Length: 607
DNA sequence: TTAGGGTTAG
Image 1 (cartoon, rainbow, N blue to C red):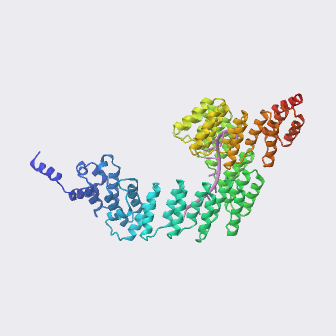
Image 2: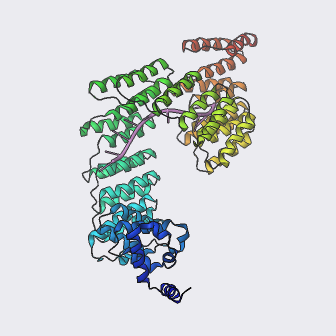
Image 3: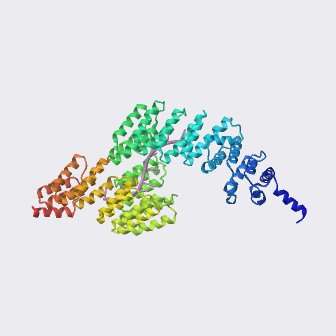
């Protein structure tokens, strides 16, 4: 190597930060990032000061600064040379001046996710080269930081930014706050959400119906309707009026809760406020009627809606198709499916899903497959729900192998298998008396990190019950509660049925009382199980007491209730009463099966 | 900018 060259190398190694920075900037301007990547010399001389110098070089366009910055962030071999906080802030203030707010936000999200960089806003402001008194800049900085923290789920830090903003008497937009409220809602942090909207009001953020509805809807979805109502009243005092969407949130909650008085109260409020129903309101009201068996009323509402000139949409049609499927009126469901296309509405995957489920439940798997094909030819692909629906259809027919075939396809397609998938297969196996396999699927589900829900627990509890292992069933029931998963009527009924069949009536009644104490009403299943238990063990009068109580509580008896009661009376030789119930059963529209006749014949002998 | 529709257990 010549002396000249040696000298050059030497000079280069002792280059000052300024020289290196200038060189980098020059390279970036002249030949872009690519050239820099192939300059190990420049990169090896990179340090935090050089980075800052480059980022603040006025010859370098802000866009190039961003490219350089991202290159440092993303290049794995440069992990030790990541930009420090000051570098971030240098770039942020440059981007502010260039009005590049999207980029500004991207840079700030690096700060938000990095624990080493995260710090109070006041500290960040100190690092900027803008005049710290530049209120507009600090305001924008706070706005973006608040959004970034909200997006990253760092709600505490976001709140600190909000407080800083308030303390410095800076302006904060409702839109910004809504980003935060929405993130809280998505993360089910309604407690924080409620406190925050109250702070918004207190600190003079112009709260509108949008923010209010977001919080109200979140509360309603968690079943905390009373708190939502309270909030609405509170905000009414601030001059914020609910609109049709706010009311729909409430109506939805009351409908789900089967609280018709609640629904009526909201409709009254709407009338007082002169808020007109829209298609969503009708969808909810119609669903409410249909699910309580008042199909005629639901249809009347549909007429009324059209008379008022409100157009049905795909949501409403899907909902209607779904309720006609539940009523096993497939003819009507298909008629609606045709009708929606005639009206120029495009069916989507949920519409097909409703119809496919209907035909699956009717046992028409070929028709279901045809619908899937039709859907695909119209450019809609199968999703998780469609797969689950089809698997359930096959399982109900005892065609477990077909269901498992779909499971394999589902996995191959990269679709996530969920609690529905596993439960469907497990209960299918359970029905086919493959209990060990059924349990194995549920255990596998948990091993794969899916959190079991109340349905999964209930299925497993039912399997143990049917195996006669009440100890394990009860243990699971307790484990479920410990895990914070609330049992529902089905869970209780499964256990009540198991204890009743074993003649452990004391335990069975205790469970019934616990259930009612939790605010869960007894159902036909509850009564029928208890009644059946009493009958098996000869306590026919106790059974009759339950049978009559059902009527008093407005619960309609089903075929199984009658069958159990008739068989109980027959065994006890109370033939007349048994035959009287038989007539009543026919009158109620049930078709007695062999068991009923065998019992009745026996009753004559027993008498 | 805020609301509504399809899938699992007795």
